[in-house]
Image (cartoon, rainbow, N blue to C red; front, top):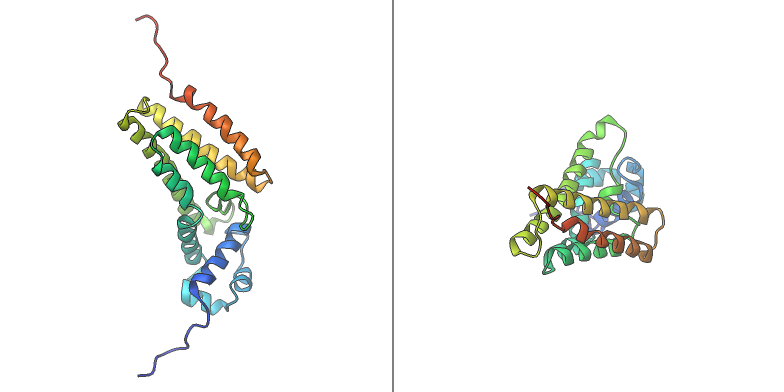
Length: 208
């Protein structure tokens, strides 16, 4: 039985990786359909047929990013035996990923966000949701430390610490995009971890 339509002459997985590199380098708003056509090596009609709209393609790209470059920091956060070790390993893995010589510098989740056009509100909210997910994963790992007994903080302190280290992750990304080396980012991580004891210490209360 004859098949309908023209068979694909490209590999969708390869095309998706090529689109990822363009969005990562130029951001969502800075990437045009012509940019995608040139990078993916396929016609715009094929892009729409295989991946949907530009926004649909971007969402697929972010899912791929989450399982590739986003994987090592996430694993580092979950696999270390203590909350402190988990945070330090996550920051180190993040610095490794955002300074790779074979990829655009910085975290795509931070740097690809649209900033202006009203019609891109859905994409902004989509990325904000992913970043809130990052915060949630860090908070959950700290909460696990409380449960395991290697971290003693209140709920409010836990939330503040999670936001602090999420902010460090985001700052590392901006620094990397601006040219900071892996060694320079390591110095930032050292400072951030030096703050750990202060952030997680329980102050003594004097008097009644």
